[in-house]
Image 1: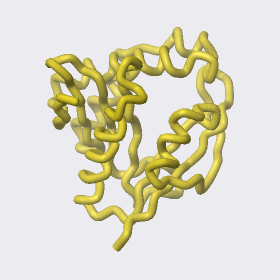
Image 2: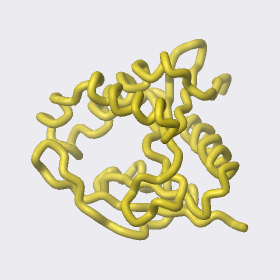
Image 3: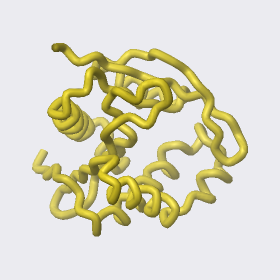
Image 4: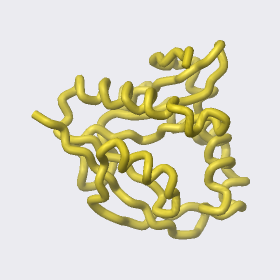
Amino acid sequence: MNVIIKHAKRDEIHEIAVFLDTCWKSEYRGIVADDYLDSMSSDERHKALIKRFDENASDFLIMTENNRLIGAAVFGKSFIEGFESGGEISAIYLHKHYIGKGYGHKLFAEIERLLAEKFYPYFILDVLKNNTRAFEFYTKHGYEKVAERWFEMGGKDYPILIMRKEIAK
């Protein structure tokens, strides 16, 4: 595994937005309505991510292999209602050809290391309930379901699991 994980620069945020949308459109077919996935706009995601970047509200990592983007992550102070004191993993995605080969574990470990440096009392994330592969990945990393809520996308409601990992003191 000869990969580089580094903090993204501002001018890389658009590439991250396109990458995240591509991953969503590939990985969430059958979980989220196709019409919603087809209507996703990388420009809208880019605007939202740039805002978070410029406000220093989130950190961004990219994972490359031979200068090719194969993974990306967004994380920082939690935006999840009721869990604002934690460190949130907002997004972690890999190119579909790299899933199941250990790359995700490497990227996830780096995210947790960086969040731990900020002394959050716990880490938090949310995952679509029907995304069993991601749920199992997070469980394997010590996360436990602590709540469930509904999230509207494209006029439809989807169950979201909120998962938490306590940080040893």
